[in-house]
Length: 122
Image 1 (cartoon, rainbow, N blue to C red):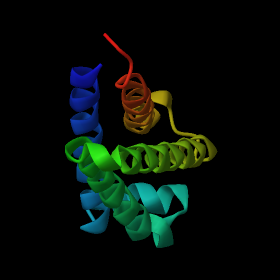
Image 2 (image 1 turned 30 degrees about the vertical axis):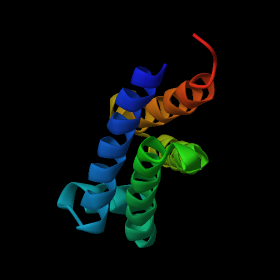
Image 3 (image 1 turned 180 degrees about the vertical axis):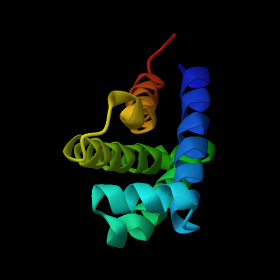
């Protein structure tokens, strides 16, 4: 489970880090989506939360003494993906448009589970 936790943790950190950075940078695709779905004023705060969550997951991976920080960060990222899916549904988006949020949210859940099972004897 240690290897799974590392692999999934890195995927979560990279995925949310890139998504958050693109929101913070005001990438046109993100701005267009925010305008269409009605959360333009939240675009940068959501981007900041995603980047900070990604950093928290990485800290949880490299600092086992504060592994709980990675769990809390991943839980916060799951919350952001739930919000994303709600906005996509309200906006009438197709499932494939929600897929990035769903996949990243699911990976965050797998990361949390892997950390909990990390302490079990082999």
